[in-house]
Image (cartoon, rainbow, N blue to C red; front, side):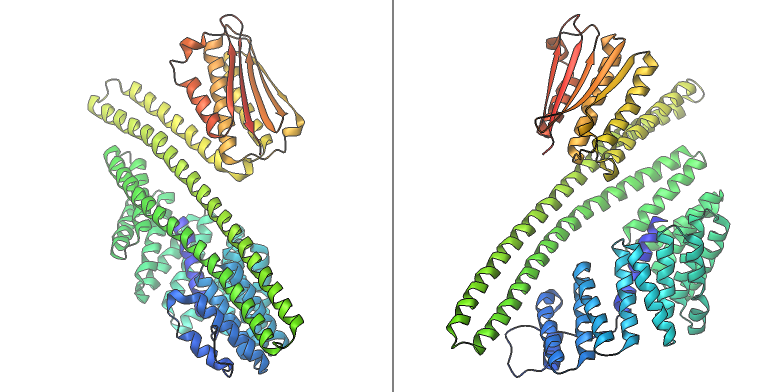
Length: 586
């Protein structure tokens, strides 16, 4: 169903561009005698890759329309600027101009119907950036205005949008009620494509409610209308959704048929996600049918497809970072050019006034200072994005190395079990169970380490208490945490939090396995802008020169070093062991 959510997001974003009723914009360095309409024509002449230049022309058009008291055209120009920013993946700027357009329609153009349509566009963007509360407020205002003018197109669009908002908030009954209101309109218009999408929206909400029979029925209706519309992409998503639903109902043979159909269409329309998700569903079906060979084949196909998509995504992410950087640079250039334009006009009007000439020079200095500051911010943002990308690569590497090797082991053991028949089957299944549990633990650790809700030291301590309890109590080892309360609300980066967790885990595990201690103390303190963590036991100690031959101690030190910290181990035969970790918090 995650594909259905992605599909709804894309459909609604495209719909917003189609729903917007707008005009156009313009550039810089023009004839003084040009009118707003001239700038509009100038803006329309720019190719796709020169959107920044088109925005300048739209801004000039809006300025001149305001001077000509043509406020309808001014609001329309601002709408077009918002659309252009939306195409440039800059929703915050898009909202800024949509709001400006809405205010002009309401205050100056006295066009309440267009004001309402702009509110609906703003609601859609608010939803897409995750602001559900404001999305609902704008949508409700837009719907009220559409109802005043009996604007059917706007009302239908808004009902579906509000259904999306309700579903995103987990209010599935309200979502279903909203979307049902648009079905008769689409039937009357014979708009089979939107009708099919609406039935699928309702099916998705029933699926979220775990009412799978109803979800299947509405997905069947969606299939019918998508076939009637000839919409292959929507048809493929409906097939995928129906397959997923039938798996929940235990109708595995039918689920396999629909999944294979969605894979086939996914290949035709070149949608790698549909193909990948189809393989995943087929693997689950084979698993539920206890077809080990079939499961292995589909899991292999799924992993190969996923790796292919991941590689392509890395290319897209890099391109997206470059594009965002270029957009930010271009936005700074637009701001500078606009300021220069205003200053140039002021200088022409007051060129004989020395005071204004000095002011002009000072303003230019300020402008270039702002540009330098903005460029610095852009570079910092780019670095931050690259750090995020580095983290993603690290997670991908952990998933590939840890989980990939475990899955390979499970596959090998499964093959051995099949070859040996009933002989030693219990042993093989026991090994598979242990590997599966290990894989689940590793995946849980990865998810926990990147969850922003766990950024505080307090959450880290909670996690470590759970681990210590699980390991030490089973060996009858008394343990206690000693915590400096000043560190409880301390925020750690993902990398440092993961380092503390992995070093502590290794230290506690080593103490439980080898120290023969009956007590363990774990201390958290804040010392000279460093988080200090100690793990002390009263066991037999060890000769570190011998222990260095293993990987555990070396791994702890390398992890700490990567986070700018260090690990010190104080021990000796018969004197217990103290593992000290220092990690900088700044």
